[in-house]
Image (tube, rainbow, N blue to C red):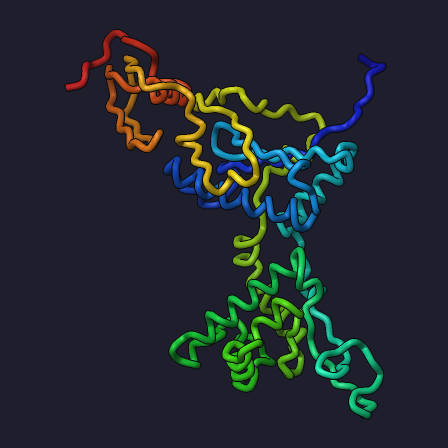
Length: 330
């Protein structure tokens, strides 16, 4: 054993309802929430990191979430610390918003850092969004435009932009210009497609960074991906094999094409047992949605479809067959 050397490990991501704040207790709702987190992580893997579909293997865990296996040779030899950095990135941990906003000198209609502007030596400077077309910069652009649009649609001006109004350098003039941006033909589009934040507002770089920092919790909840860090960081972790059955549900650990993710319904597509009636003894009332049916189980002896029996036994709320001293259902 001492002569064996570690050769490498796939980069693994585990998304599970256990790691999601305020996850619903209902199993179907829980799985739907985890699917949304999985789609967010998929965006990071293919857009931010540039992994191809051939390098990303997606697997339903058979339980309460999904696994990603990254098989690219580039990641196989990454150590635990590097893998933790990847988790930090996709979750947005310690994201410094101030570095996404930059003041540039004007040149024509937009700044490129020239020393003169239309013959003037004191070159006007305006704010731009760094990296607006990819990664976290793109997500910030989406968040800002959604915020400006939704606030500008409020009925009363006094109710608009309450978060920005808390900043001591934001007054009615700033609010008016933001409303004009939202109502203009190209204002919001220019933020998304050009990173333009040139609202002709003094200190807007500071104001924008302040707003994003104040909104960090909501922003990261919307765009960050919640993954199980110990699983990703562990370079010797054993992960469930696709094609096996999950011991806590009896459902299939199912490999999926990335294109199948949005339509995949684990409570139907990962159920492998049939409809044959099976007698069980339930220890308590229980309800679950499987194969498009709402199943309500009462305490005691009863017959249920085979797929439900397997699930209930795996969940520990029923035993196979008849057990003495248990009441028959009325």
